[in-house]
Image (spheres, rainbow, N blue to C red):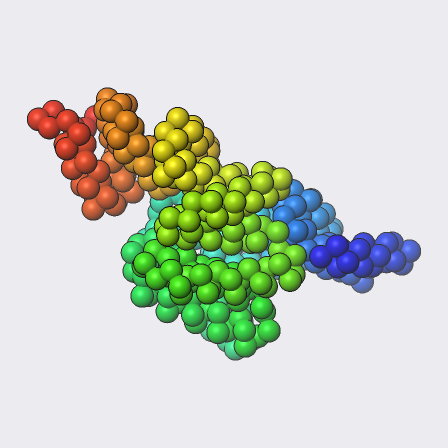
Length: 370
């Protein structure tokens, strides 16, 4: 990765001496976009955004609206990576307007995909899936196969969250096959990571471990810092599920260190939650409570309502086990109210039943959702 960034910098330096014409501008724009992609893989999202903002100005300078729309979707996607949902949605809408004006279907599909990511992360799963179906319909040509594969992978994420595991696996495998046929090993590895997560949730640890390790091999080879950390995080969850506490803690801390270093707030929240589970399993209730509280605060700042509710429920259960019944009910009622808001009736009903068992005969309800 360092070598690729070095050669990219040499290329940028070399064209600085060329005549400042339209051809020069196009070359610099392409190099800036390429540098942004490399920086994203290296985990430096802010630096990647700076390169894309520079490329955007070059597009505007040349009044190249189709390319401006394309760059805007990349900027929107990175803001979504940072959990900046409103900014991402606004930028995606701007990109769609420009792309529709230019009748650029692939870019419209990219903007719809970013929109779907935001809707999914903020709990609007059905709308997210509709956006992706619309996007997929726009990229049916063979030349657009790789973009279609990315859309299929995102659809797999939503189907998994909806509990449609077999459908999710089908979509992930389709995406992975297309990526591998196109020689896009990194994209295929990201699909394998998601596939492993579904297998783990289905209680298939060996299939999950194989998918994670396949992905991790590629991530390490290409120097993808963020996805290496994500693979460590998922492997930590797998080890914890099999009661390998020491291995789980080591993997999770390695992932957390990377997320903290690259400023990934969602990764920090997720690893705080896993460390809370590890501490709880180890019998260290005060430390578990601290980690869960950190995760809940981070999810709240990110407006990640599903993870906020699930972690609040986990903390409620932990508090109930330590006889802090009133505080436990407070967290679990808030989780139940958020599940209702998200349309997750089964989860809401199960959480209400847990509250009834904590304090039989006492009416429940009245808590505020996120």
